[in-house]
Length: 523
Image 1 (tube, rainbow, N blue to C red):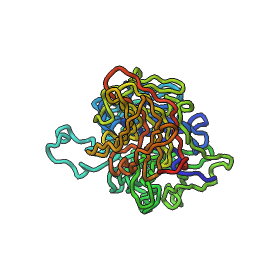
Image 2: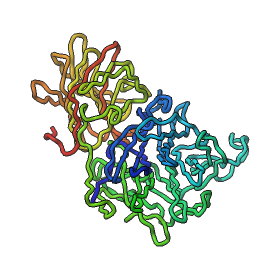
Image 3: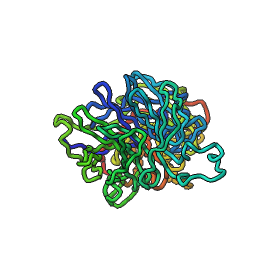
Image 4: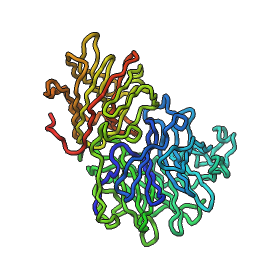
């Protein structure tokens, strides 16, 4: 069969995979959004259904005041002796660090966080012979240094300041380190060595990592050893996977790899990648997405990928011909599960949201979409395709209620209904860095308005409806919500929000978001 990359579309980066009980499971990064670490299930490796999140309680995932693109980085999901484990890093929080959680029921709750006293980020777990090994990456002095030397006084060896991948053995029940951390590999010399995953295949331990930064120079590199603790020899064909030299190709930023073996003994590599908005426009705003490529072995037993690239369309005999790839292209209040398809900025206060079958009510709070490290009353999912049509009816009793295409507090487009003294107005606000621009404001006679947003890869187009006629409020370019402009590691979120003072709930109904070809001519 043929399948298309990305296989999980929209902001779903840093994929990690495992297999258990005849199913496959995949976890992704979530950064400063709550709940944390979206969790997917598949029976064929191509079609993935989100079944929930790994981190659903504030005690597991403190994100209050987390910076944009701070929070939960690079999960690793593994299955061992009937139990699932998920390791991740909470970056930038005073209660952060490397940790893992576990569950015996993949559809249920996960444990509280168990922290491991090892630095770096992108933690990974490896199980073998009843022992557990914990790996991470970062700039770390060799563990043999004394406290005096670690403080920066005295001389340090040449390795100081280099990125490295290091590992220790831990007690999986407590997280306590049973050995010192040992540096396994310094990579191949590319910048930002990260994303380590260790797999035992045949006679070798294969150590996968990423270099080049999670941008256009991103790549997958590999080393192997006959012994767990090394030495690790780099693959002579490194990088084994990258799209960095494919100028103008729609799929870029390939890296951050994990492996899974299917029931037929075939190896697959899951990686992140992103789609740029046009052939020669190097911007991406949908975020980093999950892709998959088949893996083979060379004659000298190194991991290889056909042509060393990740294509948009993959032709393979490994997937049975009766498997058909499909995507969830419609999201509405009827079909979506509040606990599966939606997330919040940093913290979730249940009392601010009233979830009903076809209606959502959101209470206005003082934090706004512009508040740095704030927790506005905002619920969102992540845009999945360039082509989108969104409809929602907003009823505002007080303050401001609307829909936002949101990258961070300094980069978002808001279509809102605002109470202005005793009157109401429909407003289109463009927030681009330090520029806060009210592009359109139209007075309306009542406190309810239907909004429509349409997009292609280049522009968003904003409308409100009056007497069944669509009134254009203007357009805005997608590039100003891209990572190349805004920075950060997330993607465009489609969110409903309510802000202002007063103990008032504003209402949203008729929400529907369709992805695919535009349903009407863009204007």
